[in-house]
Image 1 (cartoon, rainbow, N blue to C red):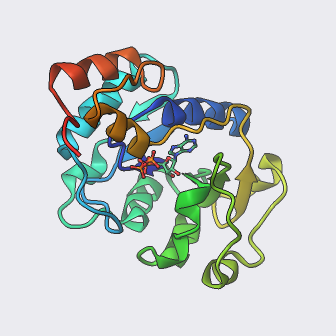
Image 2 (cartoon, helix red, strand yellow; image 1 turned 90 degrees about the vertical axis):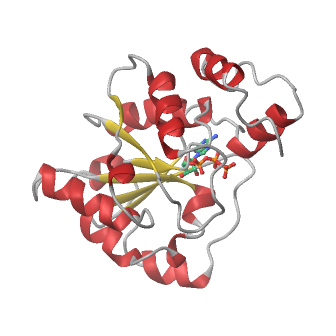
Length: 209
Ligand code: ATP
């Protein structure tokens, strides 16, 4: 699972998803847009449009799947609930991984029921350029004793471990910077898949700050 706001999806997300799949030998990477992200402001465009852009961005990329399950649930989009439903579908023995960037990982201890995340899945932290801050104490405590050194050790168990992963391509692309560029009528070429860029420009999305 690679969850996010995807407001909008960009090549940092998509390239990370491809390299995660390769690096960990995953069957699938499910990219799951949050309907209502609990810890940030209201996204700029509707959940349905963010999902549509994600689908356009994924196109026919093998192994990447746009998963709408959080749009089908009412209330805030808690990852613990999403992982619980993925676990139910895949059975107790399947290896489940929740991947997130280092910036998102730093706030993990303040998520809803963070210890439940480890009950259902492993947590894999993707290095991100410009996001290298040390861990806050509550997070240190949450992950204490969980860290493993490599993907092989991670995959020995279905859930409960933590792995930090430096993917081959680190991209300093953020959705915030993409939104700013769009609001200022500056180019976003090569930050987003072309089909996503075209749909955004066509629909005049993200035009105001
Ligand atoms: P924003 O700038 O609006 O906060 P974002 O670009 O961080 O957005 P999100 O939708 O919040 O995008 O990110 C979803 C997940 O993808 C998070 O775990 C985030 O850390 C990760 N992520 C986002 N951009 C990158 C990137 N360039 N490289 C690696 N991981 C990324």
